[in-house]
Length: 198
Image 1: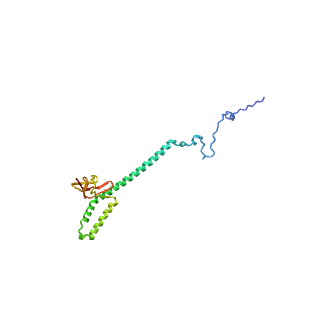
Image 2: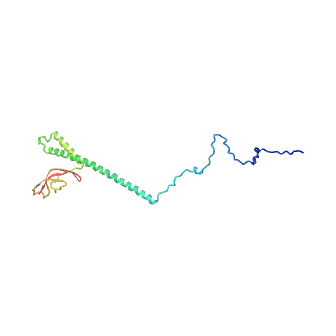
Image 3: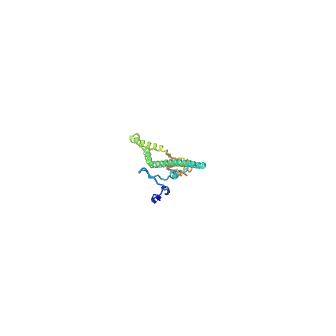
């Protein structure tokens, strides 16, 4: 009686289809190729600035009015500064002129007391020329002479040194000018020294 051969399969040779399926991770074909990373859509979107909004019409009008008001105020400030600088320069110049007035007095006295025999002397002519230059300087600064004989006494422009009895001059009016005064506009550089009728 023949023996029926029974074929046995070793355990380690188990059928492939009976083994659990394992997903093999394929290695990159290029050793320098970087592995792929998972794509995140949020990373592609960069933060964007909020859309610009226009100012309301009433606010725009306020800004425009403010700009116009500021411009007008600056223009007025500039004019005021320029005016003040001009007035400051004018005051400084008139202060210098006031210091020259005594020198003009001396020249005038010298010219009014020239002896007759020296009237045509070149030295006297030179003194007269200097006096005319001083008078021209006063004219350039619009300085006027105050010689108020016969006028009412004005304490803001005149300085009384005495009283006189006079039949020809009304009381309270000036009888004689002892020293001329000078004024530039409303500013009195030097009051006139006078005597007043009783």
